[in-house]
Amino acid sequence: MVRDQYASTANAVNVMSHANAMTPASSKTQSLIELVDGACNQFRDRPCFVFEDAPISYGEIHDLSCRVANGLLSAGIDKGMRGAVFSPNNPWGFAATIGIIRAGAIWVPINPRNSLDDNAALLSKFGCDVLFYHSALEAAVPAIRRAAPHIRLVVCIDKEGAHGPDLESWASGFPATVPKIDYLPTDIVSIPMTGGTTGLPKAVALSNRNFDAILKGVSGIQKTKDGKPPINLAAAPMTHVGGRIIFTIMYQGGTSVILPQIDPEAVIDAIETYKISHLFLPPTAVYALLDQPDLRERDLSSLRQFAYGSAPISIEKLKEALRVLGPVMAGGFGQTECPMLIASLPPEEHFIDGKIAPDERLSSVGRATPCSTLGIMDERGRLLPPGETGEIVVQGPMVMEGYFEDPEATAETRMGDWHKTGDIGRLDEEGYLYIVDRKKDMIITGGFNVYSAEVENAVSTMPGIRAVVVVGVPDDKWGEAVKAVVQLEDEASLDAETILAKSKEKLGGVKAPKSVDFVDDFPRSANGKILKREVRDRYWKEAGRQI
Picture 1 (cartoon, rainbow, N blue to C red):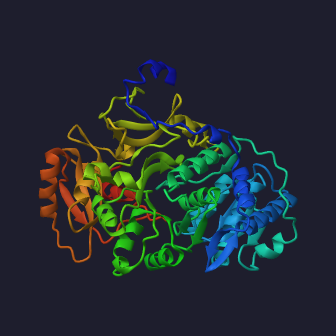
Picture 2 (tube, one colour):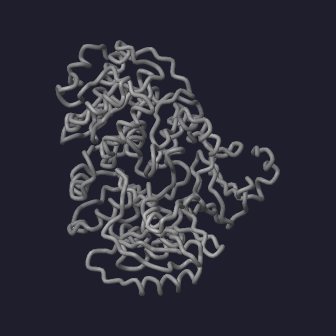
């Protein structure tokens, strides 16, 4: 299918695009390094980072990244080669990341919370020529070097290490001048990994033109009415969404206060101390924040945008956050393949006529952003009208170039000019997008399609439920039966019979769970995401069957 086949019916089908395209001023595609240098030159003396209470200026980050780039080039590491930073959140590690990109090499993000075997396998499969590491992870370096023998340079970012020189002394031997590199719009800048739960994940190829869209698009969403540069709290891993957010903050001349990891009390302290205006946390961390006994007594009035994402959020918890923190919560939808800009639900749209919006609105991930066009597509590649359910498809300059060195996998995500997200959803008449389920998570029970996310949303609204996963389990009568796996709040006393009865009232007999299991917690990825596939697979393996 090509998009032109549907051009004549664009008004009749469910194609939603933001009313305003990217403005002419931002239409010129710039490389990520051009965008970073524009900020560093304009805001040279302004704090770019605050780490362990010490400010680090844009000028310091610029100069160090130039020294790193020149050091890499002198070691023969240049355009198209690959570099990784193996570290908890750290400003010098981020400067090394910029240096890798500045040299024309490709940044391979690895999460220190992943298993050593997983990280070693990733660097082996996708290649690594240089490794910057933090001394706290020094014990893992020999295994990584054995797995990735192409590594020719190892540098410790915080002190002299057992496996290489310290970053400061090594970089001081190279000039802080900008190396002359010809950056093309389609040059690959980074290859973040998809959130695979079995086997090695795929690497997503993000280019300069992707980052141009991300920085300009997200910065537009982040802007607040007071027009002040954002003060961002970087607590989520900088190897993932947290790092891309920092680039958008730099583009605006803002400051990022870095925490090594997410700790609820430290997050609250930082908001109060540094007058944080912008913050991103995944839902599980939002819940932990709300559980802090002193949260309601602390001064968090500086917050302007508290973004949540990377996983579905409990509507009840979202409403609690809106009551406690005020009109600052910001939702949205993105994926590694098209980061952060598929849809946006800004703070003001969490309210209607001054009151917290109904659950229906709060369950939406928002509307198309200035650089996205949304559609809902059926299995035959036809765009569907408002209200109908199908696969969410998107167009926009933030959509990946493809899966790195995997054209077959890339082709599976393409339908003409559309990127297929793998998520099932619908668009309403106002353009609000609702994610119904992951395509692969749909349950077929008795010949009926049941979207697990819809059931999860219904069950999660019951008081006393912290988290719920709904999966299809083997059943001789139904083929698959709907099962709810529930994690209760502390002190909650819900029983299975109550959950089943209330679910049936809300959902009817087909969609409601047929059984409930209780767990203390769920298997989670290094980023805290619930590994739904592992929950489901356990039941199929116990039954001696494969899904």
